[in-house]
Length: 109
Image (cartoon, rainbow, N blue to C red; front, side, top):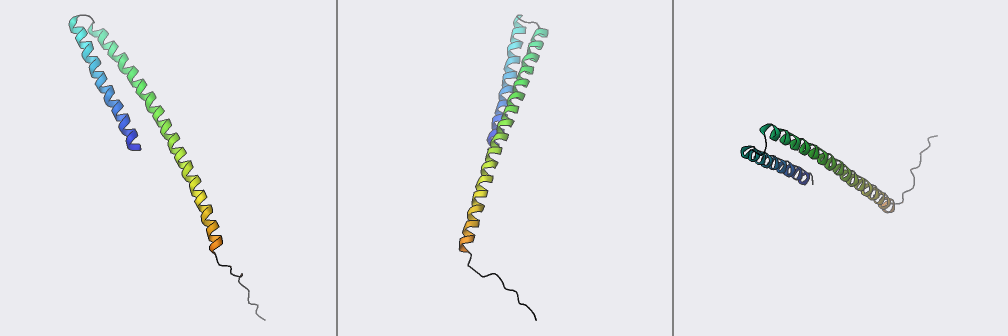
């Protein structure tokens, strides 16, 4: 499960890198065509990069919270199952234990 989460996050990072490259390419095209000044292109690229970084951080935080909730739920379920199994073992041991009288004390004269 952790591997799946890791792959998902890495895929998001890969998509962000591809998107950044495409944005830079598009902005460079606009600069070459004279539709945009180089300074303006840099400002736009910075804004897009900052927004992407914030969104990635938000999604990473949300994924961490969800993973923690999932692990807590899983841990709680395991604890409950373990307690139920311990109770069953104790009940079976009580039934299976031979009825032996308590040990007697030898009293010395």
